[in-house]
Image 1 (cartoon, rainbow, N blue to C red):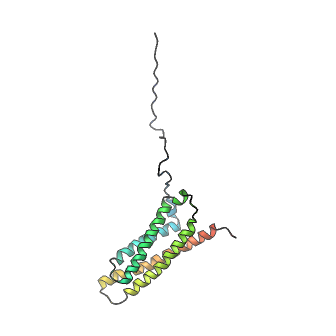
Image 2: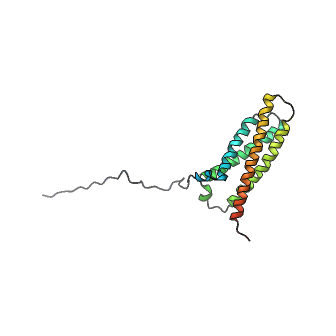
Image 3: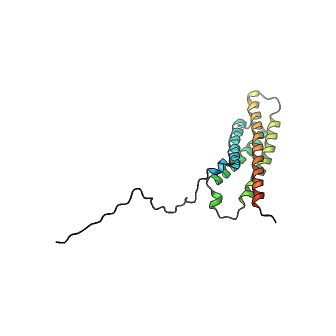
Length: 169
């Protein structure tokens, strides 16, 4: 008599599956950046930007239009930088971009724009308007001062990082 032996192998359920490189395999979440001072400053800038938008909306005077333009533009730029750091896009892209210099210039421009924005906002609302309309806009201007300081601090830390990464000539 002949015997037939059948060997059946099953996949081990505990074994790691074969990971195929996908379209989003380059994404690495970087939580540690937001534990550093520049990361915390970016979160503060975004939160203060939201508060400025809340208190200054809707824009009733021309000065508030400029202030909200500055706030929204800065907020979008900050969200883009938060995404770049959170998703580790700097490390994933091999483009010849000086990321620190680019971010420093962006943050310096936003600092100057915020400076003009809060001055115009406070000047516009300094006359004696109805307190129900005036007070939130004054609060938005004061929060704009705080966000100007946050962007200035971010610019300083980026400058220090850029100087440290630039080789002496």
